[in-house]
Length: 198
Ligand code: GLN
Image (cartoon, rainbow, N blue to C red; front, side):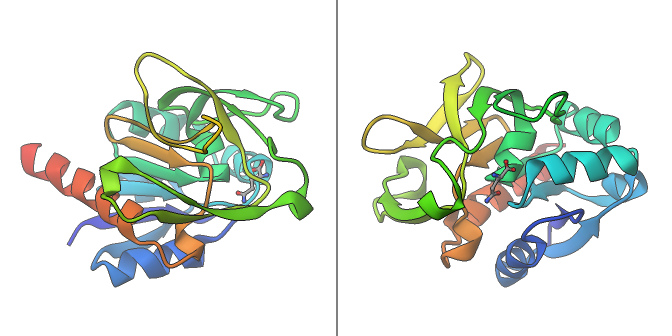
């Protein structure tokens, strides 16, 4: 089975782990650089991007993660994870760093405060005709999709909330908390396809 690392510094690590294990992946928590060399793909959970970035910096993971993703390690981030995979962010805290990988600009906390969190159904063509039930929890939005990235899903008003660029994918919402497994399945397909061609 593919071996997936879940960045385990802060956030909903357990929810992602449960979905991935349910799909047959082998999952390890990533907290140290040495753990990166043994994984076929990386999931960055939802949580608080500023806390995850601060902790990643404290354990010396920013540059190794940036290099691994730039070097082709498949990565999937939800919410805070999307922020951390964005090449550019707005409304970050001063100096907030990301790992990059997605040629997009992401706006943090774009839908308001925690109390403005909401759930809605979205069409995601890449996942088939059945709608995705999406939970937005103090979520970011994709304010600009650069040339290298592709939008996977948008709200009815056109706001982009899921993107992909090669083996890197991010969603504003949390498929891991609504019983939605197709994003993780899609990610595992990308991981497996890469392993086969490598
Ligand atoms: N607001 C959080 C941040 O900026 C993201 C929230 C989430 O991951 N649910 O990191």
